[in-house]
Image 1 (tube, helix red, strand yellow):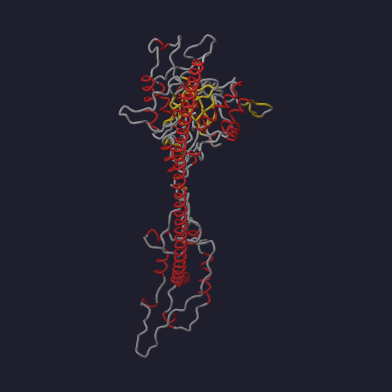
Image 2 (cartoon, rainbow, N blue to C red):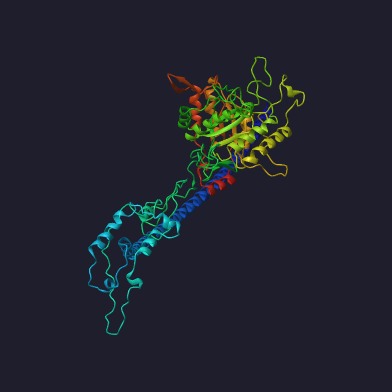
Length: 614
């Protein structure tokens, strides 16, 4: 190689090295710019978290101050009530003493049966006669035990027996008793001596019965109070209360006839709110499902099958939820169960069993789940529990592609039945799909599109919300597609209290997972049927953290049904399968930090961090 060629080769090598250095410098500059951008984002994120913590701390201090103020106010009010009770009791005691002193001489005169001589009242030193004192002392002991004798002829003439005896007793010459003339030298008239204070009878008389909280059957002898009617025809659940130092009485309940077999209105049908136990109402706020105290709730659980193709036995349907299964699910960390239902069984029943018997089995399942702290999601799964829509090559029965007009009656009945039950949520339908080759609806509607599915959703939702306005509803997408959500009315307003979801398989469906996470950034999203087979435990373990960090609700497609059973019964016990242990770990997956913040801080974080894409 000549000297010229060597020089040209050297220049080319130098130019190539310069280009490499420039590219390296450009890459370093880009990396530095990305690092600075990440630092700025982290700084903004840290600043937002700090502001949220400060607001949370300020809110906590305000709540503590408010609680201390309420405690002081409550102590002051309790002191005032105790003082008022003491004053009221002292007034009652003084009034009772005055009443006793005023009524004792009159009872003594009536017991004797003759008027007191005038000289006896004017003499301050004349002691009372022994028989009169004995009579006055014996009156309280015999009061309320001896019935007064009645004089029927006197009562027919309109006179009382006492008045007749007084009229029959002759006076001295028919003249009134002589009155003592008053003169200046006459001494002042002495007062009648007070009889000795009588001991109070512990459990006799009208006042003693009133203190015990019930009305006496017969008033005290000689009392001027009108006789009160005895409440034998009604049952009053709260006694009469007087101010005292004890706790206040319970709230007064209505008095109903004693012969009424149902003590509350509507007790003959399903009572209001008796199945849900302590579970609170749920609602949708942004992308979160919150309860009455603004705490975020995540719906995770399994599907308990058994009612969709149930056969009655002696006029009753089996209950798909047992207390043992509900307690096991709660111990795993589940918060909800889903019950697929058949439309024809709820509307018509089967054989000797009616639709009401089918709904009573559903009531028992809801009550058993709520006793363990689990919400119940009722789902319209099948239109007919006997006749399939069509059969595939292997003879399997497929779900119906769309609901029919009877589905509106189905949701109207369930909405009226559970309008006051916070433990019951609603899934409008399964997963809609195009009709199969053997389906009778294939000629009328060969393809299900979003406008068709949206009209069906709005129709069922309108029938449900007409009877149950605050219901939380799960709306499935169209064949794994969520592009038609959020659901809106004809005026453009968004439907409230909706959770959007789709069915998902553990082995595939990465595009469905991406759509689900994207929807979960602004709206509550759920997996309405997480299908898996025994060999997909690792896929479940890999997917569950992504769903947990995004705050996605999910329901496993099976519980004890093969091939994806999560538990198996061995020696009378429910033991988890390998796939069940994977789902057990998914139920215990922690939630992101923003789900545990106070409401104000959570709303601020929702604006700053709308979600993360897995």
